[in-house]
Length: 442
Image (cartoon, rainbow, N blue to C red):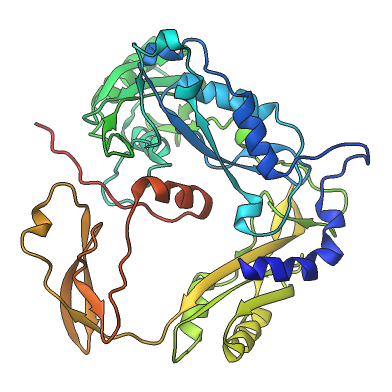
């Protein structure tokens, strides 16, 4: 984007030298683009992966800690544990990295590994080859859960349901074990087993509970074809509040952790801190901007600033076509208060990037959707309600060009939904994916 090109010179004239990892002059540091290529070039088709019967294009996001160590930020949701172990092993051996900018695309990099292309020809008849795919999702009633946190949501469900067996004292019990299962094409739990558990009664109770799991939303390929996914989730289990209730905690590999050490120079700008800076208000920062700004035309804006160790703002840079709005934005941001970022327990300087679109208050009119279009099984849709001049109207927002709601006196503004394509946005920016219609157990 234009703001990144114009803004980097302003900020990095004073910060680029000390924003790099502390290494010797003779060391060669990779950029994140080069790191992504290095990882893809060093991954191999793992031995034993063929027994799971499916292989696809695996995607995950990497970043770099302040000291240049590469780590996985998105978690790894692969089709089988063999692919997960191979990816983590390669990332753990990655060379040191440096940042090339301050935008989201400079700090986080999506990596793709095409395992079918790495597979030996002798295995192709026995393995189903798929392309990109969404991981299975575990929907919890009354709680939001995304695709990338499906496994964590399932562990949370186990914590709320599991009870230690009676007639035994588990007051000092603590164990690390592996939950092994397969989410089938129908979303059912199959091939359930618990490995590494030191107590037979706990293992039996866990396996019984795993088999009673509610239906998942199965993994889907780009063509919306469901595929099976095998999982090995390492967890720590211990009693909660001294009773029969259990507390589960997912084990996080070191390759998925940011650096926990503090930089020796606290004046350096940490581009990817362990704990990010937070806006000091109940509302989000962008929501505050939208609620505070008034415009008479649609205006895009973007920029970045440094959150100092005392929570103040410096090095503010804004890109917008409307100078008056830019001045208003600057005034709001300068007055804002922040909780500074933390790295290794120390307050550090960090960069906050933002972008958005500010529009004048819009009036909407209702247009009836095409006949029978809502009955198509191939369309995902959600109901939403908009209030116009004190009256309510209903519309279907579909993954289809024929939207039912149009702004008055303007061309239709159509938003196309691509679940697989949005996965990249979800992993790097936290945006939600289009929900998939849940199958009914027969």
